[in-house]
Length: 200
Image 1 (cartoon, rainbow, N blue to C red):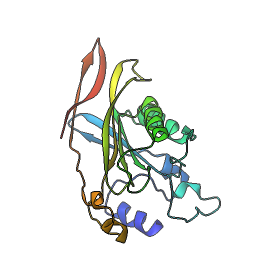
Image 2 (cartoon, helix red, strand yellow):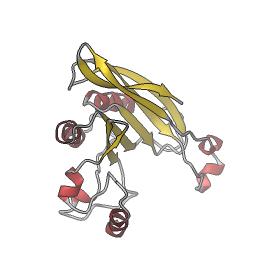
Image 3 (cartoon, rainbow, N blue to C red):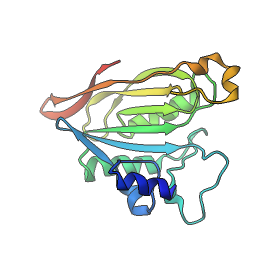
Image 4 (cartoon, rainbow, N blue to C red):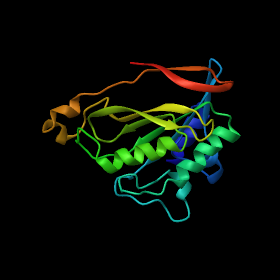
């Protein structure tokens, strides 16, 4: 992990979800494009049966997203840092969650997705199901602007490469999506806001 992060840093590649120090974990990456500042945060529900070394929780943003009523305080903290310290206009959360080869998210995952959006996340890009799951437009009140907004949850986009033996038994796992969003910035009632203006 540390070798990978070192390589990415040398090449100037922005990364999120894993970190080589606590300070790096809390330094939310923001990419500015055409005057819009987009923050990226990322979390995983599992690390394939491994454990994070004691005292080094910063190595991975590990949250038990696949359990009902999960503690989302790390996500809430990172969203606030993105908005207040990094002046992000929009926050995108990349989530490794859900259950393998399921075509639809379980109800408690839908509820978790809604809770995450309500923290001030604009877009959730989910994966792990190894197949596609629905998109949801979720209407909520933005905790930062007080405006009614539409959050987007992509529960699972599928795999770019089908690469496990289980895929032979689950043909739907060979279907995948790429998501293209258009983001626009403007004013509503004198309040500057950013919205998803197109989706493909």
